[in-house]
Length: 213
Image 1: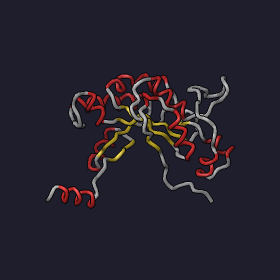
Image 2: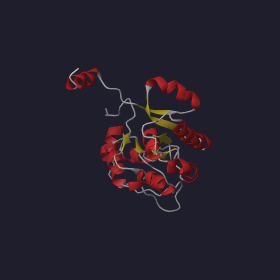
Image 3: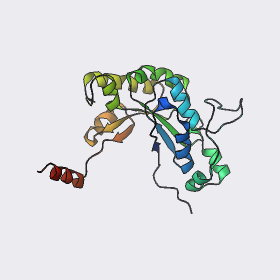
Image 4: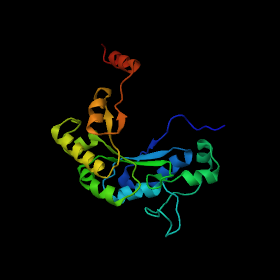
């Protein structure tokens, strides 16, 4: 009797974490997604904003008050999509693992050298981060090694971020992973994968025609 899907829809918002545009998180949450992926989060302030934007406000002194919620009210479409009443939705629409009963996931993407450096502070000081995803493409750009995602220097930073996540028991993931490499990264301890796009036959064929081949 509801539209609740068999999969868990998440939204990777368009803005970078440093832009702190809370309205985009509200938009996708009000549509019914179960989590928000924030690109380019590199500081404690940006990470705290990401969690706050996904939480409803509550009175000071309430349990699990921090990071203080900023999400505006308007739950009906999301509640309908989840197959719940508004009151039931309110009870579940908090950030996990900050709230053990919460069902909204906040994932931040670590994509700069500064983000890797600050990650231990972020995970220590900002409760409510459900996953950290390392973006090797932008990280390699920031290091002057564009698109060299397997370069030893890039992988050293990736390992540094993974170690920070493991210390604070936060799942760590990778963006742009080829299927053939998933097993290798699983053994290293990564627990989240955003697969690299693979051109379809039709796209590849169109490319060959345009190239005159």
